[in-house]
Length: 360
Image 1: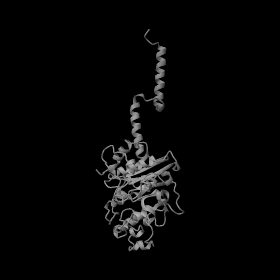
Image 2: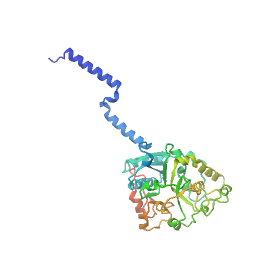
Image 3: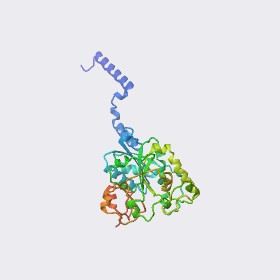
Image 4: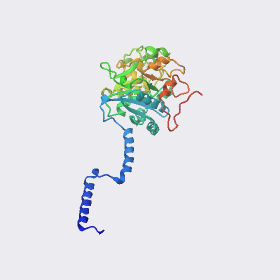
């Protein structure tokens, strides 16, 4: 009674034969029961890997706002707070392009993945310091301006070769209180490929001891500068925030123009001894002289890091769409103004490595 009939054995063998052929010919149609757990683990790892090198291919440029932020091990908390402030104040799809040093990549990745930012779209790249090797000469007193990462803004097309649309560059000592889509939609004036903030009007002029003109940054005794026919009294602009078209940047070879002034400055005095200091701003001012559209003042309220004391009223700060602690007194330091705004967006480092310094 318990022995199968030859007929049933034949049917079973035929069934197993067909199943074997299906598995060999059409493996995707057959559930891999034995490997479900390993597939799930691989998928999770793949998602993390794709996020690290993610390029927004499923959305059009009109639906995605591209933002570039550069940060190193000393300022990572600023980048995290900045990212959080942007996503907290917009409903738009933002793609973050993060540039950092090699040793900070894992740290920042863990920070993002273990915080409320785990679902943001981003790619992270380490800056190749060889690109600026032998090209940096900061003669002023602020030696931190000589950090190679400070010049990553020159190499956006090289860092992101597949990106050809608009991008917003923001220093990591900023907080965004407005909807970033408003800044992204800023229209350039005819013939312009970028937008910056001028320093000669409003609160920015009142808060500094500089005249805020080109003479504060550039050595006008230099022969090559003289050939530019730049008026020394021309209003300067701040390169800690700008909007640009990467396609046009490539066509006009902006990176090569910036490198020209960098290399010349290592051989002769072009910038650095002036009160504005050296760093990455003077070459930008030379290359974009009278070739940029102005960013609305509320979208770049700066000099919060110029003094440790309060410079603005709380009402004025509330109305600002972007705050910039440019200067020595950073929002994660012991002496800083309007720190309560920055604290609102700062997310604690899960590794405990980065700790803001506060007054006791």
